[in-house]
Length: 577
Image (cartoon, rainbow, N blue to C red; front, top):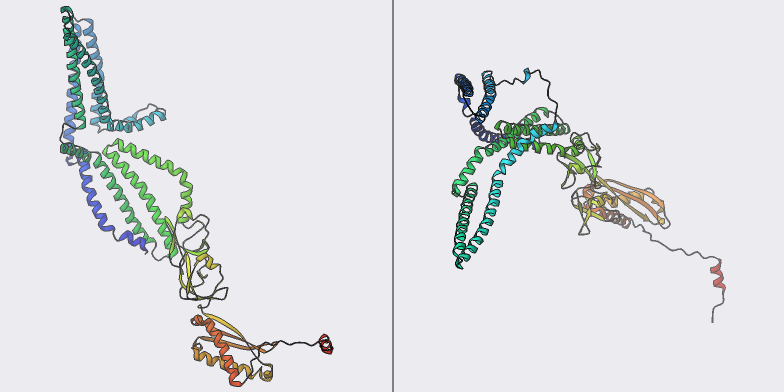
């Protein structure tokens, strides 16, 4: 089983038990508050309560009938028209009240069964506007309740500003009246001004009283009449007993469903991937992972909606439905893209797990395919993680026998220009080569395009051409090759190359212009790749040593001058004096 299965199963037990222990008490408190202790009542107690309520309804109906009889008797007495209209109105309301009481009695007696199924009336026509209004009404009502307090405070502030404006006008009027009295007006004017002054002072008192009432109302809404601790305590208690508890239950149910999904996934993974090959196991693993993930998301959404519904929180239910609808609308445009990704995850696309793909000119192995596609090369350091939406255009193929890279660190290469290079490090991005005691870095894709020869893999060959003088022509085909081979083997033994020698080919090649040439080809094992040029020198040294031992002449390039007729004519010319 791979790392995903281990990560799923090992830490699961303690977390699962802890979440379950946290969720069960919250659920018990919630349902206890919701049912007001009804779950603790026995069947006999519930029947007794129903009978008591039915008795109360019958008593209320009797009271309404007695009230109707009394009103009818009052109509027979002498009353004016206004009193008769009031009594008639009360009598008209009593039948509706009795009808409601009878309906309530019947519903309670039959256990609250819905009687709409017994109706023969045709179903009402579907009106999407009314249905939409009914669905959004709880949301709007909840938003209105949430904003009731700020709106009320803002309304009181506006009223307070208006009263303050009135108070400023009243203060100016009182100042003017006071100045007028200070100027000693006539008695008749003074008497009238005093009356006006009293009226404006009363206005001032009324406006001040209204401002005080508004300030008290604002302080009450803000909680300023309570201490900070009492305000925090009340707000926290209301939240945790109401919507906070609902959110906690919704979150707990979502976590519980997710953990159950992980448990089911781990069990199914162990069951269905047992005894299967790696590639088939990976395919089953992805199929199970995304199937369980999709099912978990659906069940989590359903559990959250169920908690909101059972708790009766219509605002949270409406908000959750709107969020769910928005997500579904958003997924509509991305659905084709997700379908393509699902095809890739199920190994039905252009690339498959375990196959070979060329990425940026480098052969790579599709190692894993989940939310990210992991590409690596078994012979290179590092790996590449690509989002699954960025692998468009890549095509994989099955090539299990093809080499992944022409070399490995520590191997010797012969470059195109004849230089010998040692591979120090190779990654998915670059290759470090040591050439003549210096490090040269080459991009991996450029390195693959260089066409190097790997000398360290299995066998490699060193070719040398060596010639002897024509005066040894008599022994050039029999004795000379034997002596040259002996000389090469002695030199190889002295230099330590003999143990790496796989085969030595020494044959007469051609009669050259100045020498009798031999083709020497030494096939060496890869362990001797470091001495590639030393082997060529050892072959030359061995051949020279053999010639020295036998007294053979090694020719050198000669220039032959051909004397034609023109040269003879030059000789017959008289000498200059």
